[in-house]
Length: 167
Image 1 (spheres, rainbow, N blue to C red):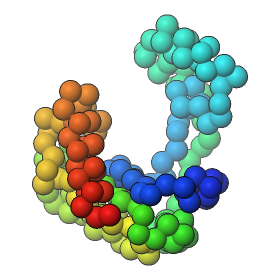
Image 2 (image 1 turned 120 degrees about the vertical axis):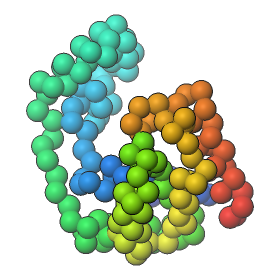
Image 3 (image 1 turned 90 degrees about the vertical axis):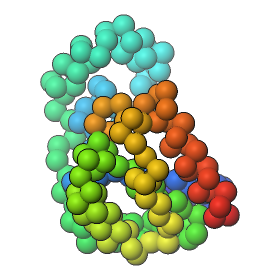
Image 4 (image 1 turned 30 degrees about the vertical axis):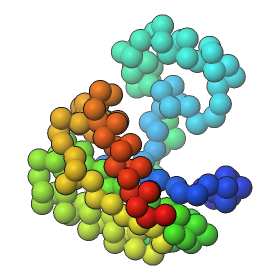
């Protein structure tokens, strides 16, 4: 958001979907093989190789890629970044608190996650929606990703309704 303020200034609502894993430390892509950090020299070449080699081969390649290393950020640093990034977009950001399978099965874990999220993001000017009451483990494909058949549609419906109701 800081790198492209022209994009931020041109949108009506910014939606962030966060989950409990987002608060277990800084997220980094482990490998440029599976998650390029720069545009590949040929998107067609990248996609073809990824498709033809298959998931298992890509996973093995990623395991040999050293990646960017570990990043450590304190909650205080995250709060400062959050406040700085969200201040210019006051009132236009929606944060969806998205439960993973563990959070769906453990309400204490979920409440702890929400408390952490809200303490880090308190300095910003975003609206928060906890979708756990409207969510179901039937909407989760693995430990976190929504199912294609129902989860993606349910998530889109929840976000759309929240945006319509809070214009």
